[in-house]
Image 1 (cartoon, one colour):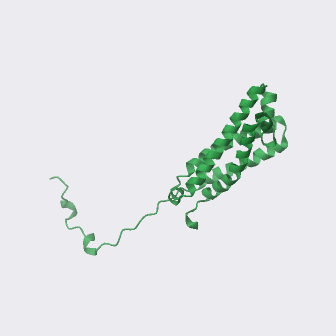
Image 2: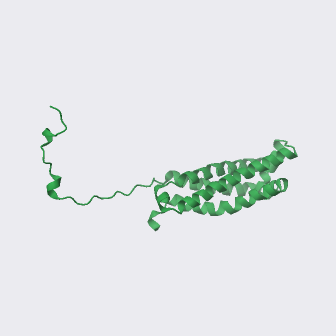
Image 3: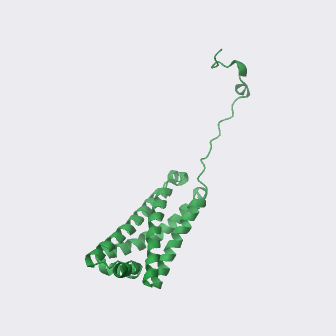
Length: 180
């Protein structure tokens, strides 16, 4: 059983175990109370950037928060789909779960990288460290996925044939499919 687990699957599962509960709680806080949820520590860089640099009004800030929550829930959904896929050995061995992990990583990297940029513009060092740590975790798994060789299908060996069956009965120059 330990031989059919890929390093990217293990790394992706560990990422999913972190991101699913954390980003779900963050997204639900934004959904329940958009302004208060947006101004909490995980989202403060987005909120300060939206209010200071984009000069968004109250309702626009709420919509911005909902868009951020939708992005985070989308990442959570792809991670959950990835966890569902790796439970099936046939999908895990063939690498069929990599698409869900790849989509989660792509969207998550965009959200975390934009959080790093917005935190640096807003001067929030704690938010900058948090977003940078999340970004590096996802980029590490993405690099492992890129470097890891694709899964090779297991070749089945044919049963040993009789020695007389291995010899051709017709000489090579006189094959029955050749035309005169």
